[in-house]
Image (cartoon, rainbow, N blue to C red):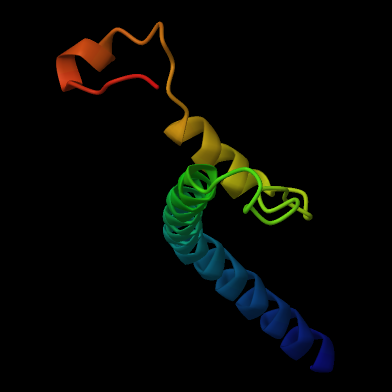
Length: 100
């Protein structure tokens, strides 16, 4: 009797895991999208910060003000690649972006 009950409990756990895995795939996509969006926003703010610092005279600029101390994670690297301007991009002229 106890073996049968334990077996039923294990089957219920397996079913719950399967349901959780199906719903987690959607939440994983949402979570990745949010992380990517957050990383893109952080990259935009970093670029603005670098641009502001580069406007300051070299003698008045703080020492190592542009240097990053931590290693970038995957989302930050992807955001950098998304924001990077490529001179050989054929869509640049279509979208009206200018290169640096």
